[in-house]
Structure formats: structure tokens, C-alpha cells
Length: 102
Length: 119
Image 1: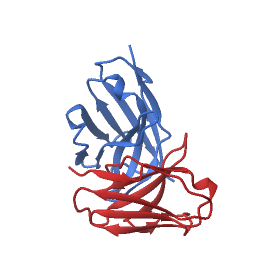
Image 2: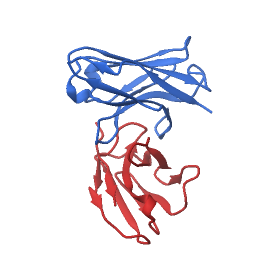
Image 3: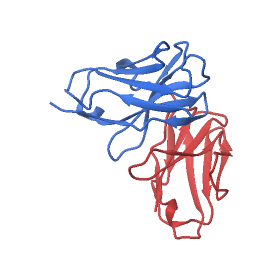
Image 4: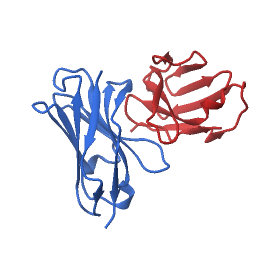
């Protein structure tokens, strides 16, 4: 069974700063990882798939990297609207527990 | 544009079985390359994947839920369904149906249906 662990649990930053979110898998998942952003009351929004491919309409401030067991979502030049929960998902199936970005 | 719409009861009693259906428009369940999946989100918690099924009934399940979950596809109605047995209060959540690109990502979500388990 594959499990995903996200860190940190909460990230508090200021506008203009850079956010680095981590997602670790307990076994090799190649690049089969996606990242989602979710705001209260909304459906998760796809940001990144195949570890580093930006979804349609996602600004280039969002970037993904990694392969195997360690993945990173980087958000440059933070804006207040980036405050949300961020989830990783492996293989189109299991989700991590999330990182809250404030 | 593919659209998904969940239907089913909003209130179910403990120990009973939940049956939800997802109606698909804008694509054919049978001819599509998508996997058809179910994801739930308890209040204040993250998404939890139940499982995914292809038009040919090839199904993959979340190991922690597998013993209670059955997925099925009805190509004649362009629908797919979720059956979850032995409900407890912990199964209270918003249930979403989804179109999943195999091994990659969720491309489309339904609007979600809130299911409350309570006597």
C-alpha cells in the first residue's frame, strides 16, 4: 500500500515570499503525483500533474518537482489568494493529509 | 465538456448500506479512456479516495475501505455507482464522483453530495 506524507502541516508566510511544500511517498511512484489546491467550500483545483506539469490556466508561480519518493510544490511570489489547503495525490488515487498555507 | 452529477440519499442510518450514482454527460462511460472514481471528504478533513473503475469493470480500491466498497458501471445508462456497507458516523462526508486520468490526476469532479450517517 502506498502512503503519502505531507509537510509541514501548516505554513505561515507573507505575500511575496516563496512557499515550499513537501510530499513523500513510502515507495517509488516515479512521477505519478499530482497537486491540488482547495479553498473552503470549494472542490479541489488541479495545479500540477505528472509531478511537474502545470494544469491548464495555472500561473507559472506554481511549479512542481521530484520523482520516486520525494516531491515538492513551490509557489513563488505568494499572493493572499494562495491561502488554502494543498494536497498531493499519487497515481490518481490516494491523497496526502494536506498542508495548510496561510 | 464532461459533467458529473451525484445522486442518492442525504441521510442514512448507522449499519445501513449507502448507494450513490453518478450520471455522466458529455462523454460515454463505455468509450471513454477515463477511470470513473469516488472520493469523499469528511467535514474539516482532506479528500479520501475510495476507488476507480473502468468501463470494462477493472476496479482499484482503497485498501482501507476495500472490504466495504463496491464500484460498478452501467454503460446503458451512462452511469457509475458506489455501494458502501456497514455505515458509521465516521462515514459522514461530502461524496464526489470523479473522472480520473489513469495513474495521473482527477480531471473532473461532480458537485458533491453531503451524506450524513445518523439515527
